[in-house]
Image (cartoon, rainbow, N blue to C red; front, side):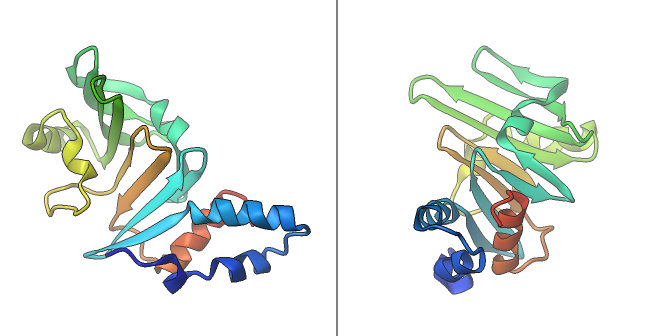
Length: 183
């Protein structure tokens, strides 16, 4: 269920609270804040969307597109010239099942990173769903899609889907703004 931003956040009032000194900065803040999105997916799942140049706070850390791309492969499950799937470790030492697919026909480059505890847990979704990540970009999350997960494509956005964030949409939006030093 997409919640309109006006239902949980008055963008203009939010900008007023930031006290921009000039109209030019006010317009810039408005353009930036309109790209932030928090969506309630039901089942206590929030989906956060940010432009790729920003970061998303998660588990007292911040994750950005560049950091998720700069991971170290621990174990490769599937690899070709265009696609790779495996267990990776991020800069914080967290393990992720990363599924990266490049489709040169459509110029798509999609990646999903699913947080896991160990290699055994990483292999379960891989063995069940295979090495391609199209199912994770569905508009409606299925029950068997593991969370939390970061995902992105060539669209200029980074997404986090998680059932661990016990926040309202307004609180999640505010954390995105604070984390990106926009306040």
